[in-house]
Image (cartoon, rainbow, N blue to C red; front, top):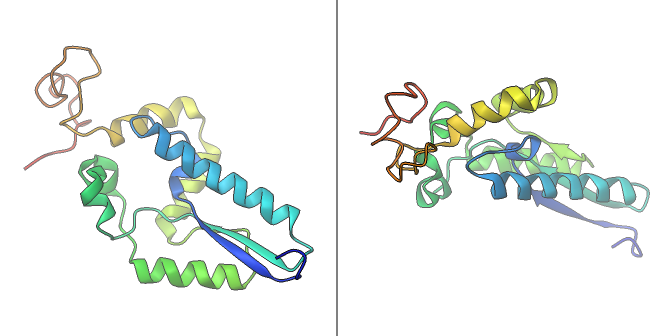
Length: 162
């Protein structure tokens, strides 16, 4: 693409790539890699006619959340889910405009801003609690699920199950 002087790459990141994510550490880390890799390539290729854009949405209304089980985490119950057509439209617009990074939706922009401004000592425990599902193993080491063991001690932390 660089030799031809045109082309591009549109990578799918996530708002998760703006911070560390206890209880989904590998997912958050992989999305951080996608974001930083894309941004570095964007800079390297900026004068070649090749566009590299990373789109980093928050939760998107797709089957992924339910099929992966992630939709049961409290975090995904609080954050509004974006329409997939809207995310695709914003991603394509950003790519065609030569943008380095596209963060669709106001809630995702606010999360990115908070991640940049708040110390990780404040965000890590919060994200860990919001990512926890009541069916996850309890962090106290009892071997019971969070819901069976520590839900009362950690009132308000567990996601409510029906």
